[in-house]
Image (cartoon, rainbow, N blue to C red; front, side):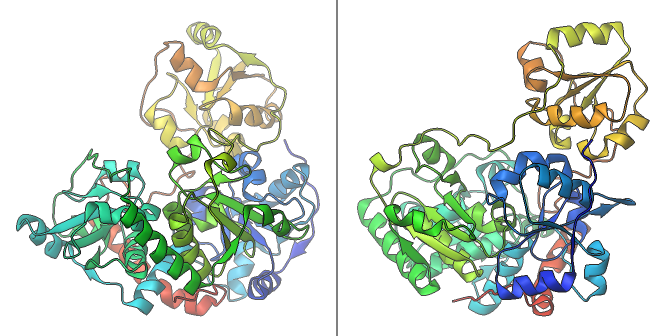
Length: 532
């Protein structure tokens, strides 16, 4: 167990002043995602204590970043333990939010619900300022039924599109819209409709096409798949339509011109690859993202750049760039996707640069970037075959610290789900055993959890070699469902716009919440959003 140490405190007013001064600061909430999503400050980023070692170095790359931590949940203040772990990870400027979230609220600080709130509130502001055109679900259904000249594109991730989609829609994730829309709608008279699950990516996608000068009439599907379901209309499931990979040279040129123009209007800065080093000064955080598709990134990318498809980057800035006030550098292979993504980040108040396109020879890295995590603790391991034998003998308890969604999909028969930061509560729910075996998908998180568990019990503690993935590869059986939950599934906030079984009341409540975000921005006043 991490030793709890004393840390300095930072007041809510000081955090707010840093945001207003636009100096670098990372305000981090170390609760699990669900309690975080219930209420948090606009620029608070979620760093669950359970996964802190796996996320900190990648998401807060500069070790002397000013970090302010809070996270009281269920009567326990997680912040001191999180601060101690951050110190162990090499961070030198860590403080606790004085009085936590309670003090923030008492000082008049605004709190927001849900996740990815900066992007969602920005989307609402864009629609209000630019009067982004939209069509309601019944209007779009009538166009489909009447076989009108219409192209519907889904701006979400492909996996979200496959789960549920508007009939006839084609998957075209946000950053790809300007680049590829002319391949799907070559006739300028064709009506283009952009949808997502709710509102934000529909609005931003539609406005992207307008900003880039697409000649077609363009509209967002008002309220996305939520609006479609609330209208009582049927969605498709398992669709697989995708946009063409190849883009006509003339269309490519028009896309580059349009994207470059809006980027310039938004104040995006340009930088040559050879000048990148000049941005990396001691007191500044620099995030470097490749905004192409994951497949393109894996084929070749610039050294030092992480994969962050542009549409999702704009949607998830709080996750991808939790240090507010940092610099962001974007790269692609031709400027279209980087410029479009950068145009939105600049309007969201970020200092953002686009790398001038370079030849394939400069994109010398291949595959996915290696995870930037500390060395795993020393643990005692057990093989899948040996664990299977132990389970037959009895007197062993398997604890799975993977994400609860992964646990529900598959887990070792008899295994208990637990959240790493709640192991003390979990072992009270699990029958006492002489041996505990920890697992997760790969065993990486389980190794860190084993250190925590050893401090809580005198029983033997093991880690499954290779995690649940190795168990499956060994041909051993799995089970599904919420069979044994040692703690509630608070690691994941249930989004009212995901999945196919959401209650109508929850979906409507979500829309009502989104409609109120502009008023919250006005009260908060730390956003620096400027829609052009």
